[in-house]
Structures are given as structure tokens and as C-alpha cells.
Length: 239
Image (cartoon, rainbow, N blue to C red; front, side, top):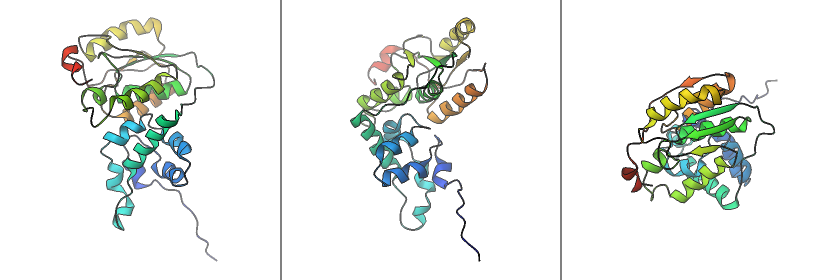
């Protein structure tokens, strides 16, 4: 007798997600009505669901198998709902059970830098983010208008990351990202076990990948291209 065997393969929505979320997993919990459990599984990969639920271009929906039957699952709208539920009920990230004793400097408080800091703090590292701009958020704050991404939502999700013990130092330079990274790299040899990172790009998925690399190696150094501050006045109207 041949019996059916369940085979767990990578769903197309998960494969298409830039943040590497377990979409199939957290959608199951959301459908079951356990929104907090769905949020906790979602935020294992993406600490900014309320923001991404508003601004992500949702390639997961393009890849969704359901579209071959009628229409794709509204993953982006559900992610936004779960993110808003977390803010409404004040759900917090669980802190690391113990400190590793390692200190990490992240250069850039955009989505990638925030995500990297979040993942590093979860494993017990002490993390400091240095941001050239006047406030954290990167392109989420300075490139996306308020009507699309309300600043109260952005600030609340950043504050939740900071609550893990992540220190965010804004206004570190008026010469842009490269200036911050150059000066920070000179100091970090004395102060930080992991030298410096420039994560100020527009995708949180890089933050997850960078954090994974940092956790595997005791010393890692990278300066990447991304958003750079020009002058505070030009940012003020978009904050």
C-alpha cells in the first residue's frame, strides 16, 4: 500500500520574500487567530512588519500559487494588520537570555542597519548604531512620504528595537555615510570587537544576512553603498 507522505518544501511566497520571512508559517497562525504567535514568527526575520506592511512591493503576492486559481493571498495587508496589532497591544521582543560580551558597531540606521542591530541584539551582543542623519529610519523616513508611512508607526517600531538595548546615535556626521564609516572604523578597534558596518540600504533582508555573518565571525568589516545624509535642512521637510 502506498501512503501519502508530507514533504515540506520552500513555498514560492517565502522564496520571493526579500526579508526571507516564513510567510506560510505565520499565515497559518494568523488564520488560526493567534496573531501574537504569527507576529513572533514573522519578526524572526523582519522586525518592522507594520512599516513593511505599508511600503513593501510584495513580490510574495506575485509568486503566490493561489493566483493560478482565483487571486493571490493578500500577504502584505495581513502583515500590516499583524504589525498594527503588535503596536496596539504593546507586544515586545524577547531579550537575549545572556550577553555574549561582544560589542558591535552598526553604521547606518536605515532598515538594514536596524534589522542587523535587532538580530545581533537577539543573540546577546551589545549593539550601537551610528546614523549620519538627524533621526533613525533611513529611506523609510527621508524617502517615503508620511501619508504612506506614518512617522508614529515608524518611530514605534524603531523604539521597540531600541528597547532590546540597542543604542542609536543620530547626527553622527554632516559629511554623509562614508564619513561616518571612515571615522568609526578608526575608533572601533579599541572599542568594538566587530569593527563597523554600513547597512544604510533600502532592504531589511541585507541586515539579516549581515547579522548572520557577524554571528559566525568574530571580526567582520564592510562599507557598502546606500543612503547618505547631505544636509539637515533638506531632510527637515521629510521627517
